[in-house]
Length: 104
Image 1 (cartoon, rainbow, N blue to C red):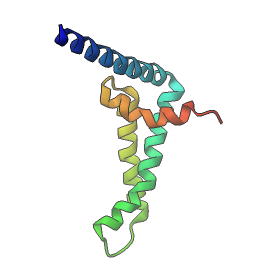
Image 2 (cartoon, rainbow, N blue to C red; image 1 turned 90 degrees about the vertical axis):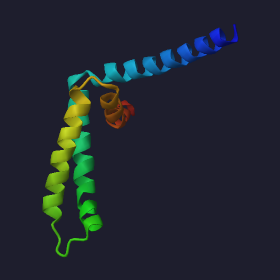
Image 3 (spheres, rainbow, N blue to C red; image 1 turned 30 degrees about the horizontal axis):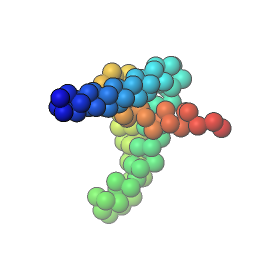
């Protein structure tokens, strides 16, 4: 009897998580949200790209190259987050959807 209650609680918790993931999937399905997810990741990776140069300790600056590489990688991550159907894609789309939900 005790294991049935524990199993029931676990199923309810999993259903709550699945409900939240479904909400994010529905919010991500609009065209403007998908475009926003791609632009969000391109922007974030483009901004963080030059910091990778500092970690690699290159002797001369290549800011433009790392910005371009960061934006290309960000576009790939954003396209995956916007168009794939996995839970990882939903989690990657979450920050952009969070900014989309904020009322400005």
